[in-house]
Length: 222
Image (cartoon, rainbow, N blue to C red; front, top):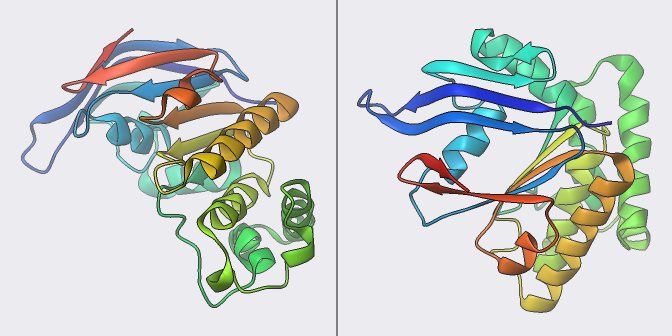
């Protein structure tokens, strides 16, 4: 089951202490699929990083359920992220020398002992679900772009997180691979009740979201 999100009076400042993100209010229910669009440099990825606790709030609040990221230390945010947030990056961020299963199971290295087996089993199940079960023992160096992104999805969902954040997940893919990825993301989020937040320039992605908002000059627009 996903977590609801509630943002209030959020500001994130850059290195020069100027606000690069200013969100007065944003709320989505548990299990919602939210798309975020807007021009390059508008603050979309900054918002995603703030939701992951990677870009700390300069002011305001970010609640995932009953947890306010803005009141947590860096170490506390890291623990929250490991336990509750899966992330998919535009450039995959896979380890070329590792197999698909080893890449998809990376979260096990940082998990408590009682969760390691669960994560490894979850990674294998996700690879199988995404059509890569027969290739789990292959190095990802030989994989296509679409296959690599499916490994990235399996890694993000292996620990069954309630929140999944994706930054331009189709940007490096051809149209056919992008469409399959969109279908996979939307279907898996719906099946698991995961709260999904996707930054994308892809109109096909917006069509599969429950709600789409825009970011322009660091501000939210509907």
